Amino acid sequence: MADVRGALVDGAEPRPPFAALAALLSASGTPPQVDREIPWSSPVITRAKELEQGNWGAEAAADAVARTTTAIIVNYVIIAAAILPRA
Image: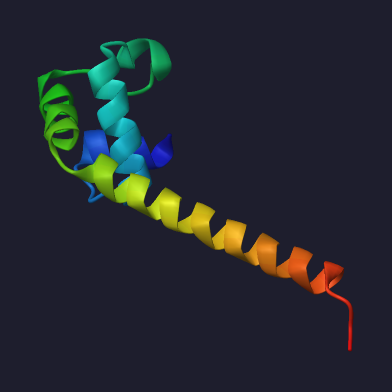
């Protein structure tokens, strides 16, 4: 939450996963219940809405898909190497 807080309160440029999380918090309509240490003032709400309107979700989702695909391929290679008879 420190990265999300930095993006919302301090205006730091967030990495995509944290920007996506901040956007999801904003869209949920319940940010104060999630982290009471973030002062949900007008500037913070404005910043959250900016992140919500950005394409952070698309970039974070693309990164997650790439990581998952890589993991699946690596697992198939390991399974194939273990199952194939050695000549």
